[in-house]
Length: 80
Image (cartoon, rainbow, N blue to C red; front, top):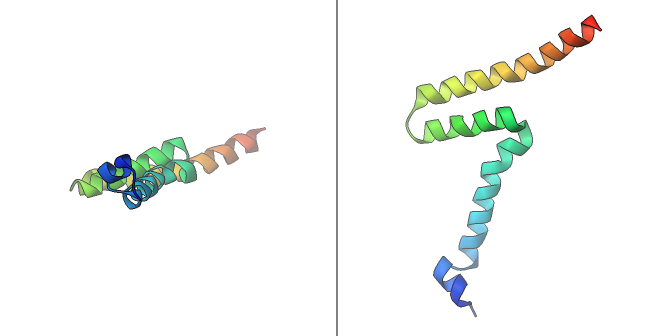
Protein backbone atom coordinates (compact mmCIF):
# COMPACT_ATOMS: atom_id res chain seq x y z
CA UNK A 1 0.00 0.00 0.00
CA UNK A 2 1.37 3.41 -1.00
CA UNK A 3 1.74 6.23 1.44
CA UNK A 4 0.21 9.60 0.63
CA UNK A 5 3.63 11.06 -0.20
CA UNK A 6 4.36 8.25 -2.67
CA UNK A 7 0.95 8.66 -4.25
CA UNK A 8 1.55 12.40 -4.74
CA UNK A 9 5.07 11.97 -6.13
CA UNK A 10 4.12 9.21 -8.52
CA UNK A 11 5.23 6.27 -6.42
CA UNK A 12 8.44 4.42 -5.88
CA UNK A 13 9.22 4.15 -9.60
CA UNK A 14 9.28 7.88 -9.98
CA UNK A 15 11.57 8.26 -6.96
CA UNK A 16 13.97 5.66 -8.38
CA UNK A 17 13.94 7.45 -11.72
CA UNK A 18 14.82 10.78 -10.03
CA UNK A 19 17.70 9.14 -8.15
CA UNK A 20 19.03 7.51 -11.32
CA UNK A 21 18.80 10.77 -13.27
CA UNK A 22 20.62 12.60 -10.48
CA UNK A 23 23.32 9.93 -10.57
CA UNK A 24 23.71 10.37 -14.31
CA UNK A 25 23.93 14.11 -13.90
CA UNK A 26 26.75 13.97 -11.36
CA UNK A 27 28.64 11.11 -13.03
CA UNK A 28 30.80 13.39 -15.25
CA UNK A 29 31.88 15.28 -12.12
CA UNK A 30 32.85 12.03 -10.41
CA UNK A 31 34.60 10.52 -13.43
CA UNK A 32 36.34 13.56 -14.90
CA UNK A 33 36.67 15.85 -11.89
CA UNK A 34 35.43 19.35 -11.21
CA UNK A 35 36.82 21.12 -14.28
CA UNK A 36 36.23 18.69 -17.11
CA UNK A 37 33.11 17.29 -15.47
CA UNK A 38 31.52 20.74 -15.53
CA UNK A 39 32.45 21.17 -19.18
CA UNK A 40 31.06 17.72 -20.06
CA UNK A 41 27.77 18.60 -18.44
CA UNK A 42 27.71 22.00 -20.16
CA UNK A 43 28.36 20.33 -23.52
CA UNK A 44 25.55 17.84 -23.00
CA UNK A 45 23.15 20.61 -21.99
CA UNK A 46 24.17 22.72 -24.98
CA UNK A 47 23.48 19.89 -27.41
CA UNK A 48 20.17 19.13 -25.68
CA UNK A 49 19.08 22.79 -25.89
CA UNK A 50 19.86 22.99 -29.62
CA UNK A 51 23.13 24.92 -29.38
CA UNK A 52 25.53 22.62 -31.23
CA UNK A 53 28.31 25.20 -31.71
CA UNK A 54 28.46 25.91 -28.00
CA UNK A 55 28.46 22.15 -27.35
CA UNK A 56 31.36 21.66 -29.78
CA UNK A 57 33.23 24.51 -28.10
CA UNK A 58 32.86 22.81 -24.70
CA UNK A 59 34.00 19.47 -26.14
CA UNK A 60 37.10 21.04 -27.76
CA UNK A 61 37.89 22.96 -24.58
CA UNK A 62 37.42 19.79 -22.53
CA UNK A 63 39.75 17.76 -24.75
CA UNK A 64 42.30 20.58 -24.63
CA UNK A 65 42.28 20.55 -20.82
CA UNK A 66 42.50 16.74 -20.75
CA UNK A 67 45.55 16.85 -23.03
CA UNK A 68 47.19 19.85 -21.37
CA UNK A 69 47.15 18.55 -17.79
CA UNK A 70 49.45 15.53 -18.32
CA UNK A 71 51.67 17.49 -20.72
CA UNK A 72 52.13 20.29 -18.20
CA UNK A 73 52.74 17.77 -15.43
CA UNK A 74 55.42 16.06 -17.55
CA UNK A 75 57.05 19.39 -18.40
CA UNK A 76 57.18 20.39 -14.73
CA UNK A 77 58.51 16.98 -13.71
CA UNK A 78 61.16 17.13 -16.44
CA UNK A 79 62.51 20.43 -15.06
CA UNK A 80 62.87 19.07 -11.54
